[in-house]
Amino acid sequence: MRTRLLPLLIVLMAAVLLALGVPLAVSLAAAQQQKVVVDRIDDTARFAALAQFVTAAPTVKDERRETLRRELISYYKVYGIHAGVFYRDDAPMAHAPDDWALPRTGEVRDAFDEAFLSRRSHDPQQVWPWQRNRLVVASPVIRDGDVVAVVVTDSPTGQMRSRILQGWLVIAAGETAAMLLAVGAALRLTGWVLRPVRVLDATTHDIATGRLKSRVAVASGPPELRRLARSFNEMADNVEDVLEQQRAFVADASHQLRNPLAALLLRIELLALELPEGNEEIASVQAEGKRLANVLDDLLDLALAEHAEADLELTDIGALTAERVAAWAPTAEAKGVRLAADCPPTTAWADAVTLSSALDAVIDNALKFTPAGECVEVTVASNGETSTIVVADHGPGLTDEELTRVGDRFWRSGRHQNVKGSGLGLSITRALLAAAGGSIAYEHHEPHGLKVTVRVPRTGPGV
Image 1 (tube, rainbow, N blue to C red):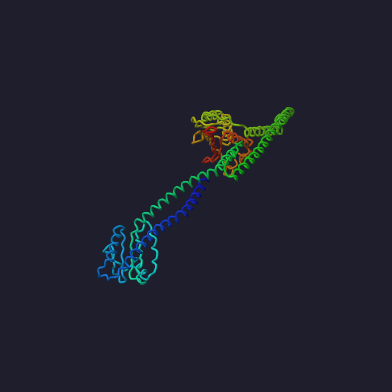
Image 2: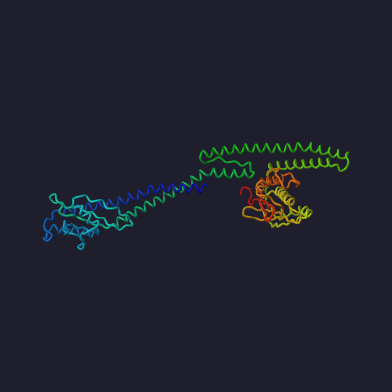
């Protein structure tokens, strides 16, 4: 969730900073240009004031014209700005540099024409740092109410563009710093908001895998998430109470039924002694009674498995698996099934008694459904944070729909109802493994058969 929420916050903050930074950059550029334009207007006004006293013809030597000319030349040398005073017929009153003349077309001509009409010249277009445009400003020379000439300045924009660029760099640095602060704040904010969610997710996973004592620590986060955590803890308490009542009922019922059932089986044995040997009805009743006793024993084992606390220790599951394979070898040989094992030394955290019981159930199930002449393969391996024990048979296997139900209590495939069993063995196995932090999974074993994978953690509790 953090990977989705954090980019969204960063994009929103970047949009806000851009919305503030772009107008600020444009305003800075406009302010810098306006400052230059005002300076040029002041300069042209000063030259116009000097030019209005020049009354002699252009061909007549005049001291005032020479003064104006010296001012323009000095202005050009100091600032590098083309400046000149031109009559209506484009003849120069004075200009600098000497080779600069009024062009026929272009921005300078347009400003000149507007000034001769005694109009205020338009503000020049904005010059950006990547452009090499020049700024043109024109002011009329008025004498006795008439425009007799026009002062024109044509300014380079290099310094102005440099100042704009420097200002933009300062803005960009400020925006970058603000963005970094915003990202840091977003990281803290998302961490604060999502920390209860992560704790809730981890606790939900613990409960789903059988650790029903897990609870959410309500410490930080938004009030809504803290309320959700408290509600979740209340729900978990209620679920644990219900499950505890269910386990207690199953255990008590199984225990209470065993004594009457044992007495009933004893009376059936005594009754069988008084009847002719080989009576089919008595034999059938005895078989059903024993089957019922096995179901009660399995129910009691299941209730104990779901309630038991695992005693985890670092265990060589390779050696433990090899021991269980050796124990089941006579049964496999009696059925004509080959039991093969590859059990290299592999350590993991497990309850040895619990894991042995789980392996017994899985291997027993594989031998039940594997026909004579086929093979059951047991393989031990380590994979990252878990160690695996794979039991693969070459029996009839299960359909996709049956795979989704295998391990459910009392469930047995309709094709295997004639095989001895109560349908609780794999349920007990799953409960035993879950109590020890392990798991069990089922899948197809090609070309036919079932593959059961038992996983146990390689890291100890609290690591």
